[in-house]
Image (cartoon, rainbow, N blue to C red):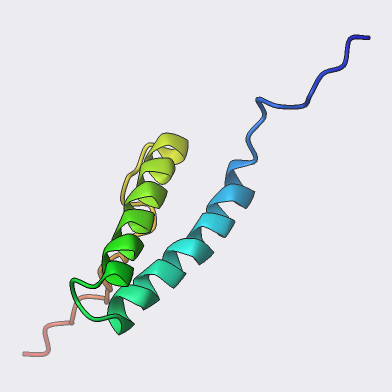
Length: 78
């Protein structure tokens, strides 16, 4: 019986969507928990692990980090 397990094919887009939800939860916890508490530190570990996975999957460790807001440059009205 020669069965293939189907392993080895990673559905990157689906995984990144799910990791984003987990990271969002960890970010929320760091905002709400007392700084330095066990919960705060554990949430930091979760974010670090998710960032490690993002780097492995996309090549970009900051894949989930907020990007700076961009606005169009002002026109000179003078």
